[in-house]
Structure formats: C-alpha cells, structure tokens
Image (cartoon, rainbow, N blue to C red):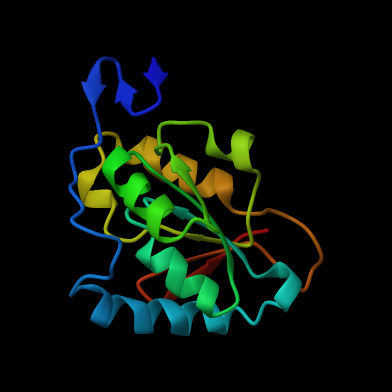
Length: 156
C-alpha cells in the first residue's frame, strides 16, 4: 500500500538536494529536451507537460521560461520543499510513480522524466504510470506519441 512517499513501509525519497538550482547534467540534457519538445510543434494552449521526478523544480522552472505549463511530482520531501520555496508559482507536489497520477492530475500532451528510471524499484509500474499520463486520442493533428532517446513512436 502506498501512503505518500512510503511504499509498504519503505521510504522512497532518498535523493538529496542542496538547493533549487540546475546541476551539471542539465548542461547536456536540457538542450536535447528543448529540441524534442520544440519538435512537437504544439500550439501555446497545448504546451502542458507533466514532469515525473521533478526533484528541486529547476527543470520545471526552465520549461516555464520556454512557455510550458508544468505540473510535477517527486517523492523527495526535501526536493519539493526546495522547489516550492524557490518557485512557488509552479504546481509541484509530493508524489511518485507508484501513485495514480493520471487519476489525480489528468493526462498531458507531453510527459518528461529525467534521471529517474535508475532510482525506481518497480520499472514496469513506473513505465505504466508514464504511459497513463500521456494523452491518448484527440484531434488527428495531435496523435499520441512516445519520445525517448531522440526516437519517436506513434500508436493509434
């Protein structure tokens, strides 16, 4: 049973944050993320993104500066605390891939999860949660798609 950041009695928020700033990995990750997101060619009213594993909010903040409306969760109370203190305008909350995130937040045209998979206990549940957050259907001009490592998969 999942209760917030504890799963069957096991704490899952072990990652530590010193502040709400970007780290060295963002120097190479963010240009690729921006390129992929820009390639979606979404109109301004559809530039909504869910970030699973938003950490300290630094990436979510950068995305909002580029016109994205970001909602995100992270199991680290420390990370969410830093994010909320530094970026109070962002919708970043405590949560994990083991929660019913689509039920709580809905579905999004874009879902992002950076530097998370290596920390998950149940990769299949993590993947299922990611897929559940991606909008399906809608107008034909916005087919559902999954992008990873620069490759795009479409499904109908």
